[in-house]
Length: 614
Ligand code: MYA
Image (cartoon, rainbow, N blue to C red; front, side):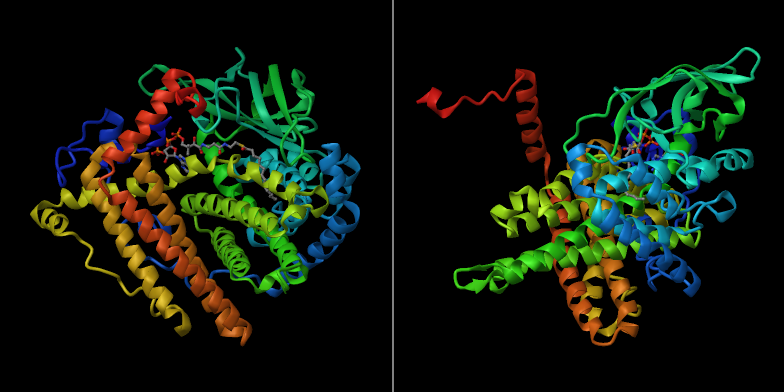
């Protein structure tokens, strides 16, 4: 997987070479071509971060900007949705019965929840991403299983039709899907295709007369697979290349259950999100009319990435909702529970746990609405930010729920408290829609690739460029945050500035040190990604708090404390991760490899039980 994940045509070429400033490309022709291209500039905060540059325009001022009309229409959906979630939908029953009744889903559909982003001309609610994020937050705070049904349907299930569908496809499918008369599912995963999305083995071929495609596919872990009527399916298709050869390339299709040859397995038995349906879906010699090609032949991987990037903010939204639920329950608990003669809210350890929950939730929410707002204002280059949001929020929600359970003591472990269900539900969010481990490597390598390309260009820019590199081009913090933050956040801004500078220097040193070998240095890449995640969270937090400070009077004092606390703790993590990434790790990495490989080669952990050796 890494040879491609390291996509990095660009990393491979940009960081290849025999010494620090000579990026001699030892790569294949396609890669040489990529290396020869001038590096693209990016407006993305995170992409620039990898070059040690603080380009703040996408983060400051806080871009959330819902006009009154959108706020009003949002409220018109939120009120009945909250009522529905508290009074109609029964999350406990859904979990116990491992099913959300279709009647409940139909009622939910009437509120417009299944067509949030669909324009009204296709019978949708016409929301933007910011509005939808708020809606998904509310759903996530009540029922993550229902959130998955909703997300699998519209964030990925029919998102391809919305993003790249033809007018005919939109007219034909969106009205039924937006109103929940029909449900959709996203069919990418296969028994041998998980994180490595490009490796699908399902096949599609064009009929002799060109009127239709014939699809054979075996898809697993398909959310909504048991009842969906419309599927976005990815399969390999032989595509004629410019040189006359034929190559299998992923292609996307819209498939109706009614085409025939579509069957599904029984609902999978899962650890959590039991109220959602997950099933195998098989497609056997399914005849797909040629009009149902989604995007272009051979462009399915791009379509899949586009859908996943675009839909990814749904998870952060649900995670923010789940965190709020856990925090609410924790506050109820610590303010009522007495031990050792005091309410447990009086103890420092309890206070620290709750403060961390609040600070993380604040950072997650800040990131979420930057992402959604930037998407709304047409920012295109957001895939790294979306991946960061997915990883950060799903991990914060997990630790928050875990701490909430801990603070409930034995009661936290009991079903009736309701937190064990949330913890079970939350577990999958670190796995699906891009496993967090893969997303971290994606963040790290995409950023390193970007920095590598620019370094390469600098190095080939003659003696001046080489001297610049040899001297190190980072002269220190840029001061970019100082003028854009609230005065009470200036210390945090300075700390963020230091982190950005240290980050850029560390990335450059890693590229120079490891050259193309960085692709195989997951120890370093994951730590760089962790640092990028915290830096982005710091920036998002300071931006949001600066905005609040303009309007919120004394409420802002509390927020300032939270924002400063988050930044102080995040900066420590950033420095530690970067220190680890830039240390001489060869011995440690080799020890890690030896221990793991020895166990794998042995087929089991080779360490004997102490009773057996004494
Ligand atoms: S659905 C299944 C989810 N599956 C995944 O997410 C798969 C994860 N894997 C990948 O994304 C890719 O395979 C990775 C790379 C990233 C690992 N954006 O050689 P490459 C470009 C834009 O690196 P690979 C599910 O779980 C790249 O630059 N471009 O590719 C259901 C390069 O371009 P070029 C990208 O190693 C869950 C080219 O592609 C991206 O094969 C249910 C090749 O790159 C990108 N991201 O793969 C969800 N990646 O050639 C329910 C790569 O030009 C939701 N590229 O250099 C619940 C929601 C909750 C509630 C919501 C309420 C609404």
